[in-house]
Amino acid sequence: MSEAQLVMRDLELVYPTAGVGPLNLELSPGGNLVILGRNGAGKSTLLRSLAGLLTPRSGQVSLGGHEVGAMSPGRRAEHMAFVASTPPRGSALTVGDVVGLALEAGSKSAGPSDVAAALEMADIADWIDVQLDTLSDGMAQRVMMARAFNQAGSMVLLDEPTAFLDVVGRREVMHDLGKWCASGKSVVLATHDLEAVEQAGWANRWLVLRTPEQGGSLLLDEAFNAQKARSILTGEA
Amino acid sequence: MSVRQSQMVLVLLMVVFFASGLFSGPAQLDWSAEWAALMGRGDATTQTIMWRLRLPRLMMAAFSGAALGLSGLLMQTYFRNPLAGPSVLGVSSGATLGVAMVALGGASLGWASRNMGMGSQVLGALLGGGAVMVLLGLVMGRFRSRTALLIFGLMVGYLTGALVTVLQAGADAGALQAFVHWGMGSFANGGWSSCVFILVALSGSIVWTARTCSQLDMWTMGSLTARTMGVDERKLTWSALGTAGVLAGLVTAWCGPIAFLGLATPHLVRATGISGRHSKMLWSVVLTGGALALFADGVVRWAGVPLNAVLSLVGAPVVLLLIMGRGPFGSAGKTGARL
Image (cartoon, rainbow over all chains, first blue to last red; front, side, top):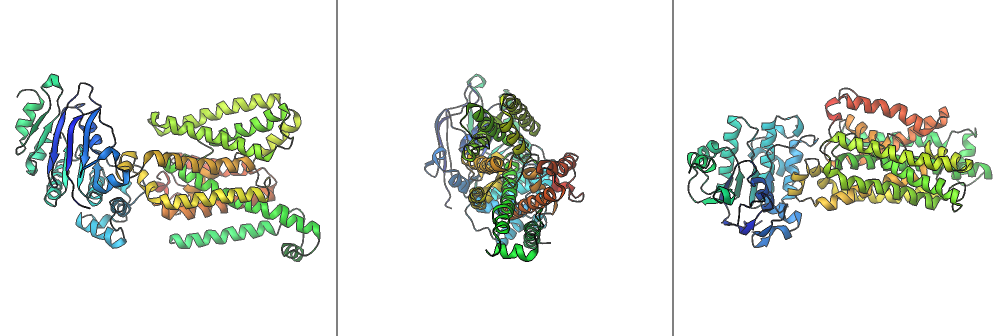
């Protein structure tokens, strides 16, 4: 899977109705984007539009030159993976099953040795036969992260992945994302976890979603600064 | 016990149940005569009993049990609900209404024979069951909880039950008797042709499930995760519900609204420790369904009670154990509630 560039062109989302666009942005392979915004600002809507799950009100999202909405689900899955804020519950799959399915979804070879290697790399080799459902939220989220990393050829989208994690868990997730960027995967992260992002140190591009009334959305090309982000979000800047 | 070993045990059980059904019965024939008839020799009556009554009935039980088990597995996976099954979600009720319209409504209009025109009955069951499946697919997005889905099934059951009662009130005695008898459930109603129909549907469904295993696995992690892993939600919805509906509808057409088999079979498989990947569960569910149905049919012949009475006596406690958070075999409790 070749690495591909994500492009948003005059993007307007279906939600919020007041509009946070038009959004224009190019993200090169290995690049990162942190999406900020208050509750209901449209962070999840943007992520779902990027993932091709929601049709934007207007404008385009393309990956490697192809419009994501027009790609087949299978082709999209080869390129990008998605991590939600809570790991799924109620599935009887084991950790090994989940990572095996991820490799399959990414059109990579998914034999027992491939799965073992992937688990080894994510440092969760001991859990191979453990059912996902018996793990704590934090542990299960680590599995979902390993799943995303092994599936995605170019990009991982994350929707508040640390929302339910403790301090150590948050730090680990943010640290991993830095490693992913270094390995050439693009990371698009929606989060409220300003301190953890700043501490991890890799974020250098951030988008604050705001309605025209709040001053419109802002794109900043600079090292992430939690203090500054907070004052923009609270409207004090 | 590995998956392979447990499947061997299931095949063995099926052979034992099948053989015991083949070589026993109210006719009190002796072994050599039965064997000769199977080989195409001996007197015509014995040949008729073996080839026209016992064999098709046992085949029907094996295929129908397998079909209902697979139908139940697909519904539990699709709705991510361990209590889903053809008899719980109203699919059997829909099929029953379809059959009632043909058998009772049709009879009073004079366009169906008293002993029920099989072709139109099958069509009625498929349309009735299919309509409920389509309705489920359309409204399930509005249901926030698993409980809502089960209440939906319950209400569909009440609605169709009321309409069936109306049809029954206006039906003539002969049609009514045939319909009530059909409702008790039996594997003895079909013939060879119905066996072929169900076998074809079952084979097609097994092939489809085998090819869709990974997608069904992904679906158990929720639709958002599944969709971002390459599952085409619309396609999976219609093919999974269609497959589950056709299997349940066909079996209902010939055997009546069979209780609990579709719901309980996947849970029995999970209770033996086989769960998770559909590639692992598929054949175990098919074989367990077949073996259970053959066993239940044996009890029906031995005790002389209707099939649905036998299945409800066993199935209702299984569901109660499930709700109380225990697998049918206690120790497997935690896997019981999972898919």
